[in-house]
Length: 216
Image (tube, rainbow, N blue to C red; front, side):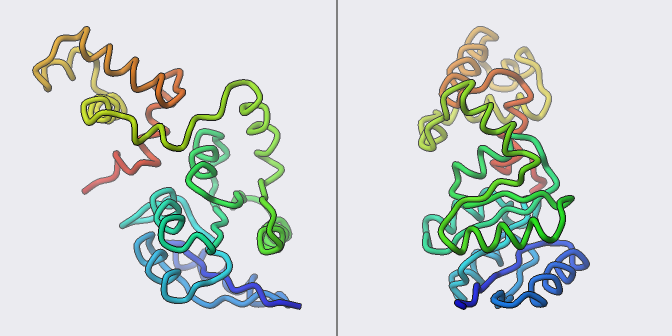
């Protein structure tokens, strides 16, 4: 049996230690490293080259989405398994588009987590059953956005989306940027079309995973 080498990236020490105990007790799974923030997760993955990075979404320095994107650019052979409490398919779809190979909920059983790790190590993809049905329904209901769409946003469109996510009205943004309300509405509409968004909630989800709302 080939040993699956896992790096655990989780900012809460108690959770991280628990995950290490669960994984280390299993035959064929070895915990080769750990990280308490996204930037460290990328650095450790580059150094250790694990088979799988078990990645929390909400981490300091670099969140799970950004860290997953970075790993895809620097060491694409390393697979990422997202571990989070978020059931929202808006989170899930962005993480999958960023290159994650799987998605497991923290509230699921350890058996589910181990099954996900082994499935991904064998070359497959894995979605927690608690969210898989919702996501498949969402994908069939509307086209999957192009991963390159974020790159097509203009600086102004991105700025408008960020301010909307922060809770500013179109009028507030217009005053802040020295533009007309109609111009702000046009930037908002164009950006939402590019990203396949339908509501302010979609904008907030997107902003969270892009790290726009994190304190600096």
